Amino acid sequence: MKFTVLTLFPELIQTCLSHGVVGRASEQGVFTVETIALRDYGTGRHRQVDDHPFGGGAGMIMTAPVLVRALEDLTARDPGVFRILLTPSGKPFTQPVSRSLAERPHVAFLCGRYEGVDARVEAFVDERLSLGDFVLSGGELAALAMIDSIARLLPGTLGNASSAGDESFSTGLLEYPQYTRPAGFRGMEVPEVLRSGDHGAIQRWRRKEALRRTRRDRPALLEQVQLTRLDKELLKELENEP
Image (cartoon, rainbow, N blue to C red; front, top):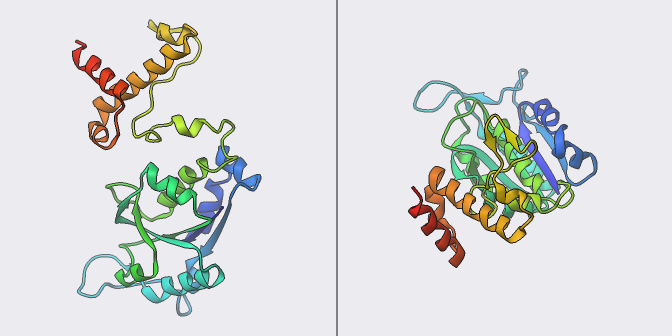
């Protein structure tokens, strides 16, 4: 798979993606990352990429000619590239979105800066995505987070291929709590069931705890999950607990 990031700060992207499991996967060729310096498409002696907004207002807006030229050059080289504009007003980036993007051979992220981008740029992208209901100084951090999420789903990134399937949101629920040695720590004990060796009981406990966490911290997620008969039974148990 290939990622392309169109940005004013190419060095930021390459540096951050050179560490950890994602960095190792990149070195092994699981995916590649290309950066396109938007400043190269700027106008005038100073390679200007922004201008004042029509109608007045604070800040500067990244101009359509600069961004569209960069997008068109990229598309000319690979007509199949899926182009994403990163913006707080975009569709929320979720685990299902991450999974769908992991199936594409080439995904590009256009990173805005300043007060945003000329709205006409939206006609030249395939999707608008947001990392969350907050505002960042630019799209680079959002691009890095999304690349990390997508890369983890690619075969060969994680040492254990089943790891991604157990993580939060992969099943629609938050992940169950995890423990490691020592069994006792400052008066807190690892649940006995996890030390029992009874794999059926462990799976049941993990599902129940995933439901407990989701019900407590993100109850809206339960409305989006297709609950099994066991899930409904476990939720009734949770409701009857003191």
